[in-house]
Length: 363
Ligand SMILES: *Cc1c(COP(=O)(O)O)cnc(C)c1O
Image (tube, rainbow, N blue to C red; front, side, top):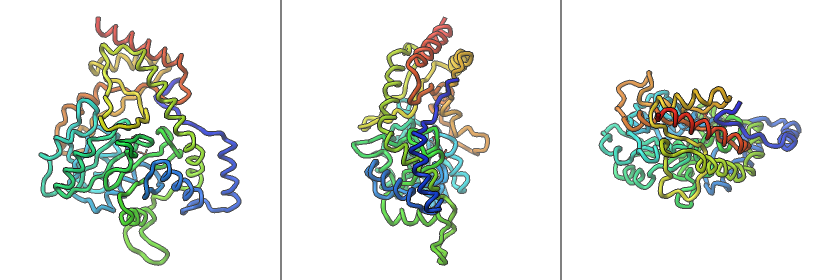
């Protein structure tokens, strides 16, 4: 069976060597030495200052909303994983959906300004498939209207925009280190804050809001463990090679797929390094997508509708704006299998099946 993704596992002996240290120290969690080492190595790798390792890529967005004191309207993208919208609702904020660009599927910054009201407090945008949003335009709006900017950078580890980590923009950028992402710690995530004052606040909120017997704020538990940090320490030195392997497979897809009836999102202009987080294709219709999925199934190949559905259409989201571009793309976009180790012969098979299914649809 070939799934849309397959987690990378490092050398087991290397992982257990790190665990032997945990057994010696009996320090399992609560800002242990492996957590601190992973944070330091990630700061160096990404070239950022205020990075905190955390539990997952969802709670970090909630922490950002809390630390920035966002409680009202947040302009956000309908084209993301459901976590992006769920956290807004979970925090009692009102998501206000701005439609996406038809070329790169990130939030259309031209559509943000008309949605700003006196209750708008922030913009929460996703760097879709690791491709950066229109960062300058978003920053300019944030300045003009005094809004906070949070980027859901769950896909963006290792990607660079104008020579800087994509994760280094906004008031806060978040990332997910879930087992399926470009870089992973089994479960995990991080926060990157624009300044150290905000970083300290985020740290507080993520560790129950107290320091010893001094209680400051209504914090929560967003700490991660030595076991997860150990995985990160094994995977991080490999991440450049993993991105290279993703690139090779993506280029093989590029050369073998029939693009007469398939399109692909484009990279936004400022991208100086891409991480090949996903390989999405956009079919001509939802029916064409369902045909491709059905044609791949007997071969044991399982692509994923990602992102689907458009978040403004989630059943528990009330009074959402209509977002025709996002709804259209979400109905037709399919992520094909992409992971280091996926065999070239399997990519050939996938391309052959996809091309045939599309051709059959066309006649
Ligand atoms: C994976 C993902 C998340 C959630 O991250 P977890 O670590 O699984 O909680 C949030 N947003 C986007 C865009 C994602 O892809």
